[in-house]
Image (cartoon, rainbow, N blue to C red; front, side, top):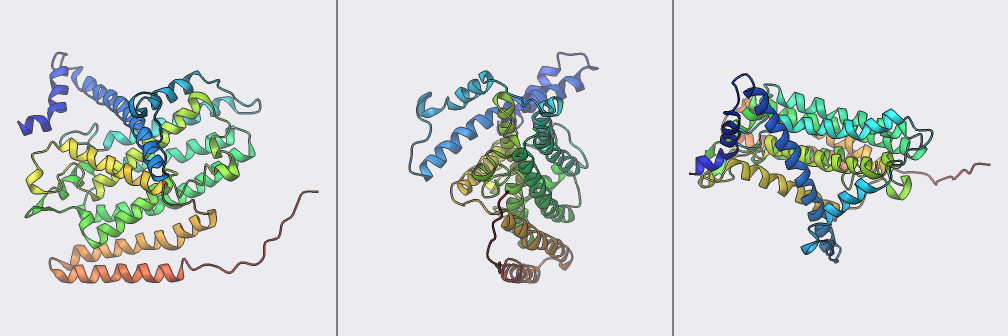
Length: 391
C-alpha cells in the first residue's frame, strides 16, 4: 500500500498515456509533467503569499489578511483578479518589445529549473546526467531578464535598481555555485537524482544527509545566505529598495506584468529551496529510517515548505543591509568560506572513516569563520560625508 501511495502520480501518468499510441506516449508523458508543474507551483505561490502575510502579521502583532474568504484564504485570488484588471501602463519612451518580454523571460527561466528537480522517487520531469549544470544555466537567465526590465523602462530608478540587482546576483551566484560544487565532489555526479540516492541511506535510524557533516553544514549555511540574495529576499532586498528606489527594476510595471515579476520571485524561491533540499537535506528521503513508509513526495514538499517558512521568518526579523555591507559580505566572507569549504570537502573525502576527519574539518571551518569574521568584516573607518547639490 505504501509503495502504491509513493508512486501514485507516476502510476496515474502511465495509466493516462497507456490509452495513446506508442509513438505519442513519450511526448504526452512529458507534456503531462509540464502541465502539473505549471499548475502546482503557482498554486503553492498563492498559498505561500497568504502564509507570508499571516506570518508577518503575527510577527508584527497584527492579524494579516482576514477579509476575503475564511481566515483571508481567498486574498491571493482577489489580488490576482486585481492584477488582471488593472491598466497596463507603458512609458512612451520605453522599448515596448523588451519591456514586454522581460517578465516572461524571468518566469520561463524559473520554470525551466523545475524540470530537473526530483520531487519524489521516480518523480523528475527530465533526468539529466548534468542536471545541476542545466539548473544553474537556466538560473543565470534571470539576471538578463532583470536588466531587460530596468533598461527598457527608460527610467533612472529602474536602471539603478536593475544594476544593483545584477551586481548583487552575480556576486552571490559565485558562492552559490561553489557551495554546490562541494556536494558534487562528494557525490561524484552532477545528476540530482543520483545526489539524492547518495544520501538515501541510514546508520541506525539517522540519515546520511550531507548537512550532518562539517563541510555540508558550512556549505548549506553559505547556500542559504546566497539563495536569499539571489531571490532578492530580505535582508538582501536592495534591488527593490522602496525607501530610495521606489520599486527598483519594476518601477514602470503595472497590472499583470508586475504580477509576473511577483510570481517569478516566489517561484525562484521555491526552485532554489528545492535545490537546497536535494543537495543538502536528502531530497525526498525520510529523516528517519522508520519513516520510509511515508510517500517520498510528502517529504520533499514538507522540506520545501519548511524552507519557505524560514525565508518568511528571516524577512520578519532582520532589517535590510546597505549596499556596501551586502557586497563586502559576499566577497570578503561568503566567497572565501565557500572556497575553503571545497578544500575541507576534499579532506573529508580522502581522510577516510574515523573521528579524526570530523575534528580536523570542524576546526578548520571554525578557525576560518573566526578569522574572516574579525578581519574581512571589520568596520571600515570612513570620513565625514560631504553633500553636493546640483546648481
